[in-house]
Image (cartoon, rainbow, N blue to C red):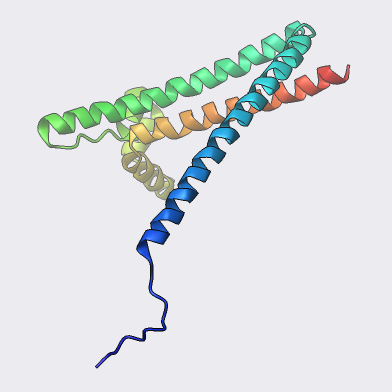
Length: 179
């Protein structure tokens, strides 16, 4: 039989709820002030950054715009490839929702479209030598979906171009700032 010890302190729920509500009020006041200060600092920083960008922008040369245009074009090309891959995947999903059967589009169908009636196509269908290489290529072309083959390189090209663009932008900004 368990007996209660009258000297043992008991948990007071009301006191705990009062402390929690006081903490919540203090936390809300802190966050309100913190966001005000953060907004002021952001506005000051934005004004200073805009001044720096405007002063550096007047020093840009024709080659800077050409390089930026090339990098942006490469990035847009990567985005286009990525969107094509997503479009193929969306089309496959649409067909699946409509029929309940997943339609597979492998790289081999694209290979057949581009290389039909060529020597490499004849070698892929009936190899006389390098049979192991043909089996490896055939396995890759039959197992990789077209959507993945478009999305991965498209994303890689777009991200690489964006990274190089921003790195070049920051490098050129500091180069012009030193002048």
